[in-house]
Amino acid sequence: MTTHFSALKNFAAARSDSVCAAMEFDEETGRPNYRLHPGLSGRSRALSVAREQGLPETVLRRSRDILGEAWRRREEREAEAEAAIERLRHSERELARERDAARREADKLAKEREASAAERARMLEEGLAGFERARRDLARRVEEEILAIRTDASRRAEASTERLIARSEAAASSEPVLIEAQEEALAKTRELAAGERARIRGSRTTGVVLSLDAEAAWLEVSGKRMRVPRANLEPMGAAEPSPEKKRGVVTSSVPAGPEPVNATTIEINVIGRRIEDALPEIEKRLDEALLTGAGHLRIIHGHGTGRLRDAVRDHFRDHPSIASLRAGDAREGGNGATIVELK
Image (cartoon, rainbow, N blue to C red; front, side, top):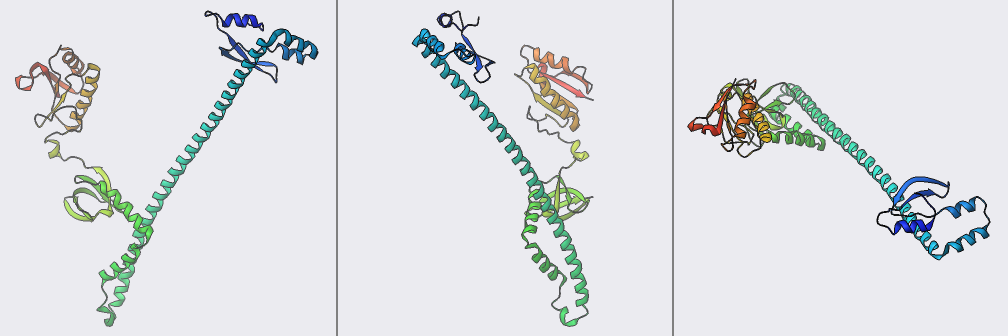
């Protein structure tokens, strides 16, 4: 029920089977805000409304005297509780505004970082390309100068194509932007490893890295070996395995079991696994075996209760990539292993 009667509020507050709750009220508009606060009995707005309606102040004073000191103290406590709730709500609004501002600032900073990184990469790329153009132009002009020098016997002794080109390149390479661009290009090649593919910068020539040292790499291009400075290489990722390697020992990056027992068999050990965990792991291992050209997959599931073994064989019996499956022989683990022949 709703009431302004203090005796009813006190009655409800004193009982364990009753709950008091106050409806929030806007003093300025004279209307409720429809926010319910359990645990508060709420202040009576009867005298406030009466004053707004024009009742004489003498009548209002007499009413407060009749209600007594206990009513006044209760009204003060309720007023303090409502003020605390309003302060809390104000703090929540301020916190929400600060949180929104912080999120907007974080988004702005992230965009600025991305733009700065993109601009730096563009400048380095343009600087490196400009350096290459300048170097080629210098080489061309040096060649032209050499041709002119050769007509002059007095200058021919000190003129050397290599010496002039080296001197010109050394002067150009001392520019800070070009140095940074070269360091950036060299940093990209630090991830190169033997066996990976790389492209010679500024051309379409690609090859497989045979070996590397601090400054250069040996590259196999169309069956020929060539030594290329590391700064002139662009990584392209791992090289495709040769047919001979595809027919050799199969290796895997999936640490799900022991090494393959022979050149065409991959193993996976799921002993102790739950069925719902083991089946996806075997599926991944099966995909790997198909990709690497293995002929068989050996699934080690153990004996146990037989539930895992039966689940594995039932799941893969009609798999489209499996030609057949059988229990292992005595050397392969017996009935504690399943041998899968791949199509």
